[in-house]
Image 1 (cartoon, rainbow, N blue to C red):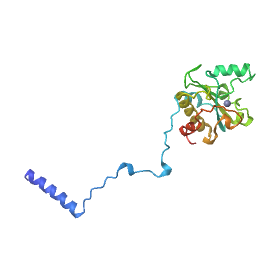
Image 2 (image 1 turned 90 degrees about the vertical axis):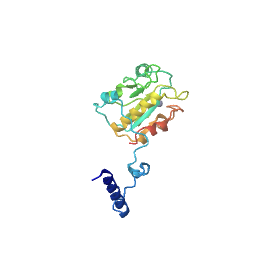
Image 3 (image 1 turned 30 degrees about the horizontal axis):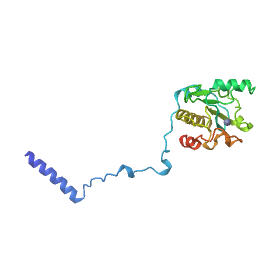
Image 4 (image 1 turned 180 degrees about the vertical axis):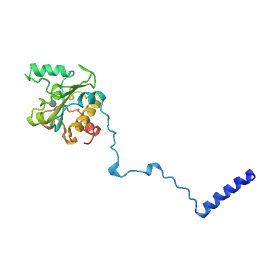
Length: 207
Ligand SMILES: [Zn+2]
């Protein structure tokens, strides 16, 4: 068969199919109109992965019945877990030292955003941070170095805090409602008027 004739036959066949309704090319659906149902929509922010050193250092630990995460500022410009530990032992006379379970540095005294793990977390014992027995007993105390009445937490501190809070929520089954600021459990301005609490909640996993 002549080549040109072959093409003619093919084109005619397709034209006949089109006219007869046998062949209806599918109408492409624009991607923007394809949405999963509301209930299966992913959260606005993707969940952040915990930093490897947090999971590798903490995952093997037994955790007790923690119910709250209580956030503090140090109300100092600089500091570290070791420094606060000395202060709590010498000035406050606390034999277990550092009252918080975690300290997040701001670059003055310890690297910016570095998460330091306190002995009270490693030993899974009560904190001495809340000033209220229930929150010392059931609350995991996290202290961000800085005075957030005068300044703000650094971006690195907030990123580390989000990762740590999410990790602890998952590990200890703590709801977002129980991620609180110190001033939620007693009369204090801690963690400072500039602490971006709602930004933290927006960035942490809704457990
Ligand atoms: Zn506090």
